[in-house]
Image (cartoon, rainbow, N blue to C red):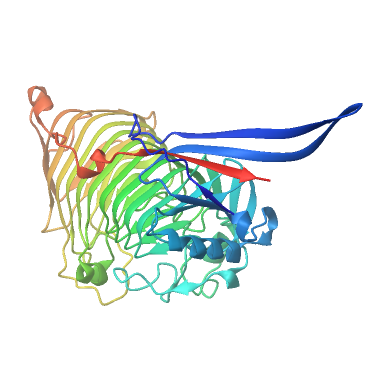
Length: 490
């Protein structure tokens, strides 16, 4: 059953925060009879109101296509049939697929353009445990192979490629990857995984993406992976995975332009946000950087990895990353740059400010000796360029070591600037709080005092150093619309 949207598409008064309101109204038609009343009919009407980059002219429920939310019935066909049927509205105002309350077992399905997938607050997408149900696709061209195995990769639970204007949102509905099966196979050694584990959400070659107001649980591997895409808003996402689960990165923008990540809470077995752009010779050849990225109001817990990682797959380049108002709790490192000989590419013009760190192994970590090559065909002359790294206005407590900064011999990391940073060391901290090799830069107002290769400019220079860009990026001008839909359930 298709339902028309209300003609309500005014701009949100709070474009930086997605607001979701779900109102359930029960309209009961009563017919009076002698000596009492009987209920002749009942209509449940659900009015959805939320902010989005686009509103849709048409809406339907997965139930209309045979979906059953009992946690046992396989719904892959229902989801794919629904998307395929709604795709005809792409040129007629677009369409929304509503997922009601329930547990919806499914394997991978693919989205379409001008499309919204909306999850009710009590809706749970459950990833199928039948590996044979998961399609296999080719490795990413900028990686040349899968990460877990040299062959292809299992398609992500929610997938799309070559799309425009795609929204995955809800009233904090849940997507549960049920990843334990995949983690066990990953740890099982050779032969357990023929292909790379699926991600929860992956959109490729897509312009105009919104992923918001969802809870993502137990991903088999990475959680959110926009790749070769542009104009991306990821907002109000909660990501939870066991801290020892393998490679359960939170959000990984990969060869993407104009991305905004904000108001997210992530507990991860790997990096909370990992910025990427391809692997060794494959990433160099593909040549698509990640640039113009905003990260703000992120809370991260990652005891064995980084809050924000740049790399290690950065061979297409990473440029103009701006992170602010970050809270790191019980994590291995606050900001980590990972690269190595053979990677090529660059990491430059990185700006981080307003970061609070509590219980850390390192506040800052840079390494130029990261291994893990795609194959043995990488070019040993492909030396990455790391320059223009700016950290300012930070406080850290209970830190084992302030920083471990290791460039590449003969090709140092340059233009490092650290200003107005106070790091309180743990009771059992390392004797030497800073180690620096093959790095060059300046500092001001940093405690404890950095190593000599980060020349102290004196406290009077503190306000003028490591400036955060004053001008906004284009993604910050994005305006959200208020969308309303009436869903009738007999």
